[in-house]
Length: 261
Image (tube, rainbow, N blue to C red; front, side, top):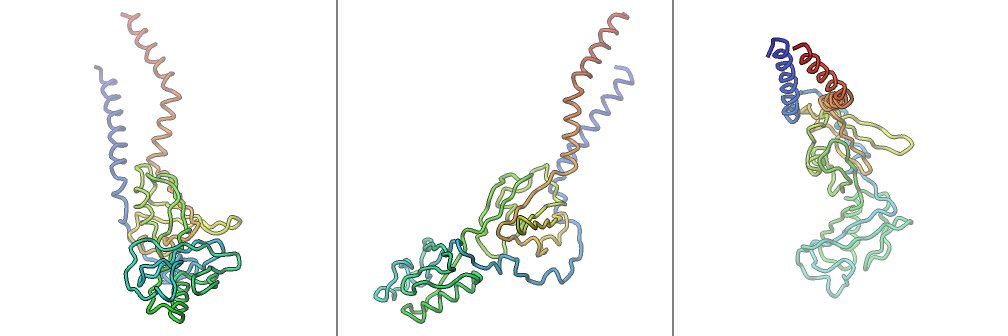
């Protein structure tokens, strides 16, 4: 093997080692840099899931933790038992007039209330009627976010609790792929006419406390490709396009060498 071929071989090996080392650093880039975030960003806003206001067509799950009976089956004669419920509660869809129909209470107005406000309101109404020391649990079970791109399990996920964070969603979706750009996670929120894009840098440790990373109903999370993946794609495309020409050129060189012998 002559010096030219030896140098060419080392060059190829060096390129392969470079790309391999880059791929292994994917998760080493997370939560490293430190950046101060303005205190004003930590002020709660009505956009956060904690302040989500119930709307018509929302689906509410309600149960009384102090009574084993279903909310739909409750009546004054059976409301006294004190057993903790282990199953899910009853579901109620909010009507167009903003109410839900509850046993013993009739139509209860919940539109415009937060989850906590509606929970306390229903609890107080039952306490004033026939339930002794009710503990009402209320969940809004139709709230969802969508995540796609360089994530292992893309799809739609329910916001099962207040203040679900981007990190929790990524964990639930199986984590980032090796091609993910951890420095530029895009959260698209707002109306269809006026969408707003928020960019989160997961290489910054402060992203854990970034209030913009608290997910809201209807959010779309897009995980972009990193530069390594884009570079590898370009290299692969280059190889796919020019490999036949290179192969033909190498074949011609071999034939020419044999002829000269």
